[in-house]
Length: 495
Image: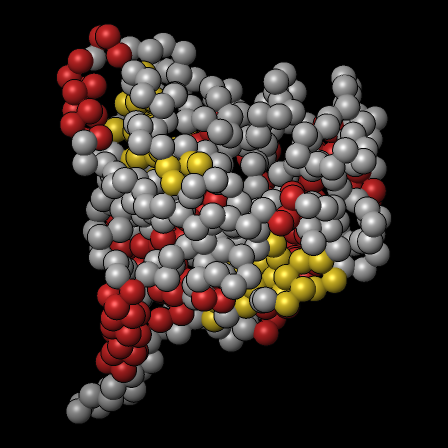
């Protein structure tokens, strides 16, 4: 979509939304009283960072307490075959925001600071065209200060958190951002740790909901938890201290040398996930307090699979028994939790096996809002699955293929290598994985082998041929990217 077409789409979407509202409020010539269109639902999207498929109690976790997220699943719909946009941070978020899969979305690498393009149309812009107030509170990762990728230039009225994902590696930074201004965090100077950034960010999300309670609003909360550096405040650590064997300290190679190793990494990870669960509970409690529960749809997910750095032994079962982890395309790297709750609209305790992925969020949110969906995107609305096909008035459309890739990027030149990248394709029960650039595709039947232990490529030539034919049209070559600003690597504070 060109910059001109982008403006035309947003202008047309606004006219369409106003037109629908105008039509709904007309007075007829007969005796019927004037009626108003029902207000579209508020939309809350909470996304964890590196939370594995098996890290929640409602997905089988037994060691970590997640009562609030479990309650979401008990009162809503839990998906068992939901996928992230990519296996690493920024590309996955680009897919989520644009509705394009990894063969088409703008940000296809993860060095930090790569911005969305001016012509990109984000879910925030789509919802804003339908009259929504829009806010993001947490980790953006799709454009820094002064770039076209900044959230305030991509449809968000308000932002509080981390712009650059490397800045987001720190839980006690000297500052975060409020829109484009630095927001100092009290006591976090010269490595001191007083103010936990996720706590501040959650407060801003709650305040946004309070100020916009008359709605409709879109509140996007991409938490940085439980991404390493594995730190939680003492009140959360105390709940788990002494409960787990700590075989060895954890040291993140990306952190400055004078940072101490985390001597209780398992305790810290459990404490972080439970603190995230507490934040989910605070958001849900506020929605109830303001009387917004019945007209707010809440999504909870994770940006990719569990991180590999700590879990060679997978003590917590973070992958849920799936093969792989963040940074590869086996199920453990891209299958994520997805829970959706909307009282009286989504039946409680529903478990869905519908296969969905991040590109589907934009068209789903657009349909819920009565907004126009950009033409040509890769996502498909899952409203029929959420509400039931009878309520939605149509059957659920199914993806013939889902597609992922991660081309190798050269930060020095801003260009991608000319090679077949690592890829994954989901086609019905079949999952093809190209684990390395140019490698032969592996093939797995997920209905019989969800752990991807048996490569059946040699037994299914017709399936492989069909997937290979699809791959010829699945992607466009990624364009050169702006070289990202690496200044966040320079110190603890991110200055």
